[in-house]
Amino acid sequence: MAVGSKSEQAYQAVKARIVEGTYTPGYRLVLGSIAKDLGFSVVPVREAIRRLEAEGLVTFERNVGATVAGIDPTEYLYTMQTLSIVEGAATAMSAPLIGPAAVARARAVNEEMRECLDHFDPVRFTQLNQDFHSVLFEHCPNPHILDLVHRGWNRLASLRSSTFRFVPGRARDSVEEHENLLKLIESGADAEQIEKAARLHRSATLDAYLAQTNH
Image (tube, rainbow, N blue to C red):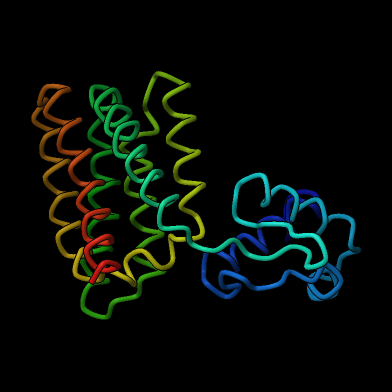
């Protein structure tokens, strides 16, 4: 059974298609077609598109209408740089509040990621990657830092299905770095050490992406 308003349902449906790569960068979002496909009127779809535009996943051009936002390498660079700082801080602040059950949950997700490596599915892997990191930063007691982390992840939403597609070699290293982060948290490592590990983990993905695009 569908949950939430029609606007919320339309938002989730269109966002999922962008994230999964069904609607690729530059794809024109025709309100009437989407509304018909979802069985809704145009009004909730228009509201959903406006919300996605506010998140940066959709752009609106005069005489063209709404299209899926393209991947701006500079925007990706700035977002990843910012995320490495704020997510590193959030993870370090969360660490003392992450109990054994949360560590076990994160480790189970990481094992699923490890299993994904043999028959690599970048969309599945990227979703699991977000699930893993959520466990590590959601305990952050500072709501302002947590908000910045969420904003960063939202900006990356249109790239989530493709980051590891561009740099599949990063996936294996990423899983090992995750395990290292969990061991640091379990051992009660100091905040500075955890923050540095989390920050380097994020920036290594950025470095791999930049090296690939430059290549």
